[in-house]
Image (cartoon, rainbow, N blue to C red):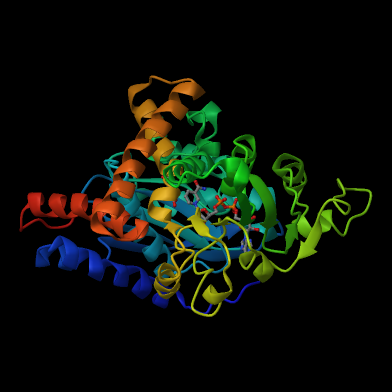
Length: 434
Ligand SMILES: NC(=O)C1=CN([C@@H]2O[C@H](COP(=O)(O)OP(=O)(O)OC[C@H]3O[C@@H](n4cnc5c(N)ncnc54)[C@H](O)[C@@H]3O)[C@@H](O)[C@H]2O)C=CC1
Ligand SMILES: O=C(O)CCC(=O)C(=O)O
């Protein structure tokens, strides 16, 4: 595993330090700084789960609503052994920025449970998912805080959570959570949306740079749900995916890998390197790909390095090794602010998380609208609405970056923070908690 030199407190400090430049450029009122200095609500809960062997285990979980000026809090739920309050807080802060960047009527929220879901049976995972929703039920709701998937929470998990909330509310309340299975009110296109949106941002950027997909090679860190759909669609558009990594290792083929074949094995819990060091039980890629180190993937000489795993992956200690000509952030916060500055010095553009990974939350918003109106759309309609919103907001960010002579990240933050700051000032001076 690559080293991650920061604690989650450093992660929050690093994330909020980026606001200083934005506040200065926008000359925001002190009220705005003060309001955004800490989350609006942080809830820690214990999540008791009866294990299959009869033992009771109590996990720790959180739900944080960072800011709800522009609407109810919105953001996913992460199941991961390393999640803690500061990580969830930072992720909820980024949600507030990203929803504002793409003009959604939402604030930012995030949730997490400190657990390794791979060590649970299916029934234990279901009990954990339901217990978590029971624990946070008082602070969520379709007009209050709307959770969604994140790392290790797929539509099945979200379906259990939705069902549990309905039992608590004694009413069908699909708009309380998004990313549901389609059969339970989920939107067509949600599963692919994060990857689809990220590819669209890359395509818009490539067009502006007058680069053709056929000429561009891509390496991807974190071959999970978001990355798979990105890779599949990018290959269809003509890009060459030369390398992939997961939490166990990485593989490389300079001529190009086939994301579909590889994903089929990944969904059977086969990790990437097992496809190269293989036996007869898997589709063997030994003749087509070589195993490489995960850190080596980050240092490959490719056109675009896609970061789709977790935060804090490119930092002070490894940024000088990066040889890609551009970086696309599908993960939240994969590049630290110091690494960002070093990349800017070398003119390596970063297509930032708060724009590049908004496809997921945009389609979550479309799901929420469908749940509230009862009018369900076909997949082409969902994809078209996603395309139109990303195009409009990404064009604005790219134009602002040119006008102001700033990085894409700074331009995106300016766009989002202008909207949040205007909302904070419009609310007046004397409001208590929402
Ligand atoms: N699911 C969604 O709708 C959205 C997800 N994101 C972000 O995208 C990222 C990925 O999310 P998902 O694809 O949903 O999660 P996922 O759990 O499906 O995929 C994560 C992948 O990263 C790999 N990974 C973990 N640590 C790694 C490491 N050190 N090196 C290489 N690979 C590593 C895992 O093995 C897994 O394949 C996360 O940062 C998430 O917050 C952002 C916006 C929306
Ligand atoms: O779909 C959503 O509401 C949020 C997804 C998410 O957690 C994210 O964008 O990081």
